[in-house]
Image 1 (cartoon, rainbow, N blue to C red):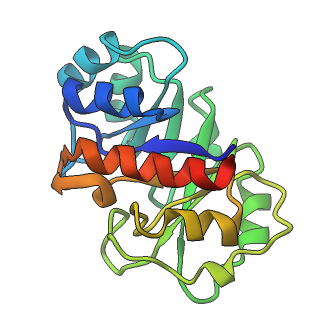
Image 2 (cartoon, one colour):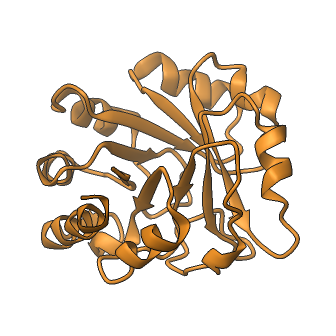
Image 3 (tube, helix red, strand yellow):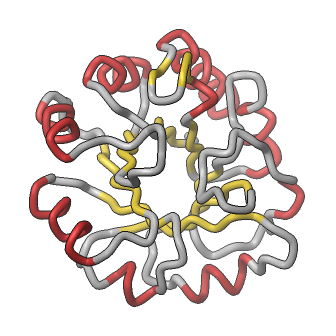
Amino acid sequence: MTRVKICGITNTEDALAAVDAGADALGFVFFEPSPRNVSVDTAKTILANLPPFVTSVGLFVNADDRFLGGVLDALPLDLLQFHGDESEHRCRRWNKPYIKAVRMKDGVDLVAQCHTYHSSRGILLDTYMSGTPGGTGQVFDWEKVPRDLDKPIVLAGGLDPSNVAAAIRQVKPWAVDVSGGVESSKGKKDHALIKAFITGVHSVSE
């Protein structure tokens, strides 16, 4: 069954709605320029209210050591997601399981990326847009994803309830990741869209 991560969680109500709908993981954005940025204190409150067996994912973009270390000291995050230009060494130095985001622009060699980030738990594929590290709301060409990658693939980039089933049929990812595609406004989730998205995922997985 394809796993589901709902990213850009900013409040407890949305977090619990996502979990109730069947989300496997929740993403918390620790990147101040993002409209979905969440404070450590808010994230701490949300995490304290989550039931067991829900993976908490912290998203970082070229964060400095002091900031990233402070977040990890304060929060019991299960998984890290690096969305910038972080090296493999920098990703693994925190002794936490991680996934590395790769923005799908022309010339990207995913086989090489999987080799470079060999210590990662998986590779997240997102849409490339100049100057934007993620959350573009745009779909990339799924035909560019090789079928023989030796890392689990998390598919992101413009997914929503209307296209997630087709995306899963074509790419066959380990998991899908959605943020803007289930929002009523940036940083606020639409609970009906979350349910519709996960229903779409399960319609393929069953």
